[in-house]
Length: 469
Ligand SMILES: Nc1ncnc2c1ncn2[C@@H]1O[C@H](COP(=O)(O)OP(=O)(O)OP(=O)(O)O)[C@@H](O)[C@H]1O
Ligand SMILES: [Mg+2]
Image (cartoon, rainbow, N blue to C red):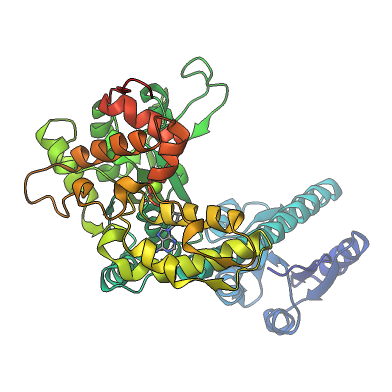
C-alpha cells in the first residue's frame, strides 16, 4: 500500500466493452484506471504500475480467476482485489473472499452496485493508507524509545553490566516471564522497559500497572476488562490489560501487593492464555509476556501465605536482581555525570565542572533511595548551585546514611533479617532525619510522598515524636 492520494485501478476481464465502460467510470470518479483483456496483459500492467485495486473476472479464457487472485496476493500483498462474478458463481465468490478478495460485483453490472463498491473501496483503501502511516509513525517512535532507553541506561560496574546483558537476552525470548527484584529506585522499571523495547514485539503494547495503587474491586476490571453494564459505572465495553497486551508485555509493578484473591485469577489467565471480561461469557485468547517487579522478598510472603507459590513460580522463569547502588559504587560517577548533563540541558544551566569533593562525598553515602535518590539530589544541586560548577556543599546528605556504621543495613539477607525489616528501618530513619516532615523524608528515600504514606500505613509504622520535636 502506497501513500498517494490518487488510487490506481486495473480491470482484468476478457470482455472489451465491460473493461472500457468500467475504466471510464473509474477515471470519472477520481481514480487512474487501466484495462487488460488477457491474463498476460494483466500481469504486465501490474508489474509496470503501482496498482492499488484489481477488478478481476472470476472466469477468464484459459485461466482460473482464483489462481490469478492467489498469485497476485502473493506477489503484491498491498493490492486489494474485487472479484467480478456471473450468476451462479456464489461458491467461487466465497472461496475468493477466503483467499483474500476484498469484495465482489455481479455481472451484468448495475450502476448502483458499482457506485457502492467504489465508495466502499475508496474508504477501505484510504483507511489502509492511514493505518500504514500510523504504523510507520508508531514504529519510528518505538525506534526512538528503543535508542534512548539503551543509551540512557548507565553503569559500568560488572554487576549492572550483567543485569543489562540479562535484560537484552530476556528481550529476545518473548514468551518468558521475568521477575525483577531490587530495592526502591534501583531501576526495576527501566529494566522492564528495556526488555520490552529491545525485543521483537517492541511495536506492541507495554502495559504497566502498579498493584499497590488501585483498589481490589477495580483491579479485576483493569486486568480483565468489562462488558457494558457489568457493574455501576461500566458505561461501555472496555478492554482490560490482558487483552491490550496481546503480543506485548504486561508489567506488574509492586507485585507483592497483588490481593491474594486475585492472584489465582491472574495465574489462570497467564497459564491458559484465555480470559473473559467481567460480566461477559465470551472467551478471548491473548498471549502476553509478564514482567513483574518487587522490592520485598516474595519467599517470605509465600511463607506467610500472602503470596501464592504457584504464581511465584510462573512469574520468575527468569530472575533479574538489581543490586543497590551502595554495592556498586563505581556506578555513582557515571550516573552523576549523565544526570548532570541531561538536567543541565533541560533547565538551560550549563555545568562546566563537578568538583572532586562531590564524588568523594557521594562515595561515602549509602543511598537508601538508590539511583532515584542520586538523580533527585543531582537535580536539586544543579538548581541551587551558584555559577556553573557543582561542589560538595551543593549536596546535602542526611547524616543518618552518611558514613555512619550504626545505621548500616546488612548487605545480604543471609543472617535471617528480612528485607521488609530493612525497609521499615529505612523509613523510620528517614522520618527521624526529616523531623517527621513526610515530604522531606520521602525525598530522602527517593520515593513520592504518596508512596511513603502508603508504606507507613502498610507496615503500621507508628510515628512517635519526642518532646520538643
Ligand atoms: N542504570 C540506570 N541508568 C540511568 N538511569 C537509571 C538507571 N537505573 C535507574 N535509573 C533512573 O532512576 C529512576 C528510578 O528508576 P526506576 O523507576 O526504574 O526504579 P524502580 O526500581 O522501579 O523503583 P521503585 O521500586 O521505587 O518503583 C528513574 O528515573 C530511572 O530512569
Ligand atoms: Mg518502579
